[in-house]
Image (cartoon, rainbow over all chains, first blue to last red; front, side, top):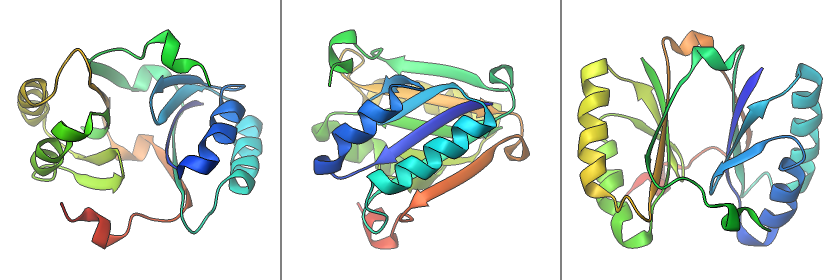
Length: 87
Length: 87
């Protein structure tokens, strides 16, 4: 499955979430990760993220499509710089 | 087309972008809009957003799929509150 994961997480919890997601996905924008995952990886990530965030205050949305070829992706403006990928 | 639009825009330019996007799409997370658009609406939005942002500093990604039924959407944590939709 191709996954786009977007998040709105309060600053004190954000680094653990990013460090965790970088094991599985590419960080494509400040609050966006993307990549191919198996169904079992998606389940694992959902379960672990639910423990890393405050479910009353933080929000994560996971968009899944069967194949990246089903999505047209267009970027306007700057691409994510490598330096900003460092946590 | 079903569109997911994510942005990373510096704070002094963010309100005009949100006000503009709310005419076309639903604001589903702090930096995420979603909704159904025609191809001509997508072209209009891309063109207008390119003028509202600083292309050296800001970033917008537009994901398009033919039909919302092709996407599985899962939310973890809080839903976007109505009050935070007010600009």
